[in-house]
Image 1 (cartoon, one colour):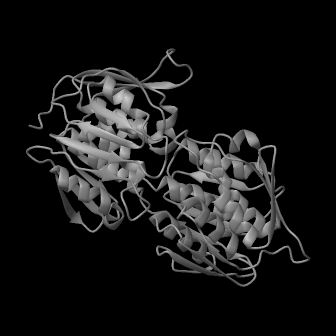
Image 2 (tube, rainbow, N blue to C red; image 1 turned 45 degrees about the vertical axis):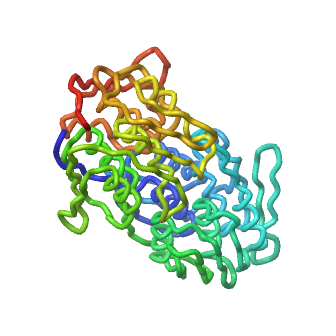
Length: 431
């Protein structure tokens, strides 16, 4: 494989920013929106609330001037965890919200207790009954009140939910031990472009001074750092030179550092363009997932695929989600040598992987299996691509443009899920 890849807008920014548009009673235009199943579901959710949405390419126009309801439908929320983001904007703007407990990938417990406690600190009455979260603000103003909130864990979801809720609250809100992820900063910049007053996003303490009303905006989402890092790993695992643009290199620091330790070179050809130059041999390294700016849990599976072909032993410790090592069994089916004990995986590098039928267990696992299939000898068939479609825009199209040999087919093995056949008759040497 070789060539240049265009990196799409960040999935995790797009989902929360679309929800954040509920805060504004005027038109909002969001640019660089990726075409993903999850983004489409979020659009369906907003439409069910009375929001007018139209999309032209990667531009999304949202008119939330006439919210007809504050009750999110279960059939959409159950498929999309990010739909829970709507509780903050709905509560802030309407004074009432009814949102079912969310669904999403089965990668472990992601409770909403931090969201709930934060909203309660801001004066909301929140009750959870029969799987439904009911929240309302008492008083004539129906406005939340500023508060000082400490998060027991720097949860991205809780930070974003409370930050959105605080934009229209009376007074000042301070979120301490806040998540520092780039997507949190992107959401803050989006809200500020509508007239919000948010300071400190990207640090552990975020201060929000509430305003009575927000206004229209035209805003572009940042590039997807997980997609970019996934393509960097694709270059490393297939011994290919690949250029990526647009990217924000600072967002990729943890992934770049580990790739350099493994033995590949990353070159900045421009401020927003990176190129991976394969090394003579790959060597193992240890990885521990952590909240940003630590190594991202969303890249753990992809790096495990790479380390399975790297010389020596590697230790991967998953600290963010307790059920995010289910791809190990599938990689071992392809000839990897990985042992798991609790939340720790010990990876012993092997000379080659062999194609096999495998099943993706979640979004990032599906990407890891595609990467493994690209490097494996023979044909790999991957089932469960509904996960892949939730987070990667046209992944197979982008890989084909680089020269990968793969085909997307509709099969009956695990109907109605789609499958991906990856065929690599040659073997890359990493010795």
